Length: 340
Picture 1 (spheres, rainbow, N blue to C red):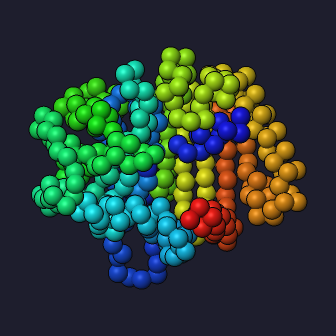
Picture 2 (picture 1 turned 90 degrees about the horizontal axis):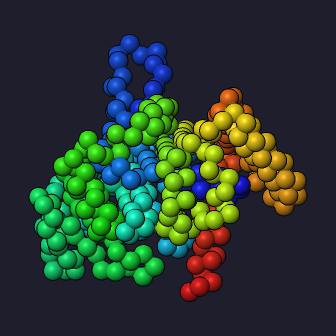
């Protein structure tokens, strides 16, 4: 069950500012970038979203971003990759969406959708330069560009869907995305459950993740082996009663997380709630002596709910979040140094 929670926890802000005592009006906050499900094919069962515009307004995020890593850092590498594509992550990017889709012919695939304001002409010129070492394949009115195979990653390609959206993933998945643009009525936006989950995202949250549990259950029955690592066989036996799950994260000076799980019956919801409380009890016993910060984190988790819903809440003070993140980076630096 603990691993199940980890999977759900992995499941892309209209900020409201209090008025001051000044007589002159303040500029209105920028609207939340559109979390548009019509870009995804209907076989997507998980979507995560990060509103990068309002995320950067968070003091906690700025503190994380300002911390200079001692070694290679994924965030730095990602920004470098975007700049090579002709995208300035500080100016051009409004949001990032990540999705997982199922396919009977290719198994499961991840894809990413960058939302923003992109100069497609400049990007095309850069992608087609010989030094870019990319192949180009026409597909309908679009072009799919493929990078050289990356060890451990494989096929990484991209398509400029329109001036507000860049898709990255495997070629087969990108073709599905492009097909969806020509038939939006067959996209994920037709999934009533996913639409409802997205509409429930709090206006203050900069990060959200949404899971269609029924589609996941069907995948567990029909496509074992094509799911992400950690979702196979006995690990997923307790997921069959989960109808939906949505996670929201709000970063200010502190961090607030909320995970709501929808079950197929009040009985199963109560069973899940009891199991989670038991896991937390064991975690408190195990972490109390080993790591005070982790013990404090576990103590901050609250489990409640009603009927068919189970709700987990976690409010993390900024000082604790910074220490935990710094400790994680330090561990990663030490592991990197050991392998060099």
